[in-house]
Image (cartoon, rainbow, N blue to C red):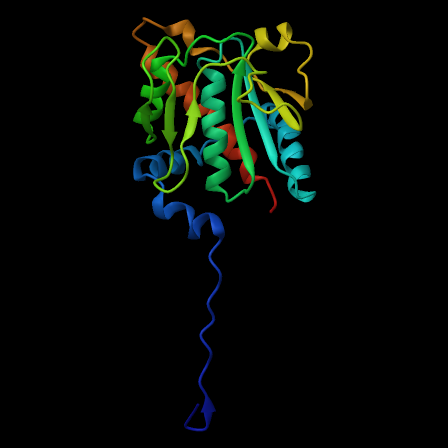
Length: 229
């Protein structure tokens, strides 16, 4: 339509990135705040070197249109491996990376330590305990509409976990040393974290679990922020 002999300018609408357009609508607000704070963390250069092989593994899968399976492994599958599994799955969703399936396991099965769930709940996740035996099953939700992450302690080769075409991410030195071979793993990637168990029963316990969770979260944020879709 003309106005005084001149064509009206067209309204240009710039597309909103997928991660912003869809993922923040139903993610829990407290978790959004936690992730916003985590995004400001500066990752040390030496840790970026450690994380780069994981970035490369994920990017290769994206480029070849394959599913991405990540199995985070520590000794007891009680603390660090669960934190890593949950945060990796959450950050994949945050950045809109599709077909990412995160798992965890140990060289032996024990139980997910209750302080892990308490820490994640404080940081914005919604957690429901589904069983009350010696190895409880937990449903961990990061978003109102997304499926819960199912968490319980298991060995890395448990039937619940993938048997092939996955990256085995060794989150502790003892599991890395104690398991020289992970059957079915395409890649074996050592990304180690200090065990917050060292502070169990101390005045520093709450702070150290929160610190370790944030450390893992910030590194998984870095990893998935580098993926090109």
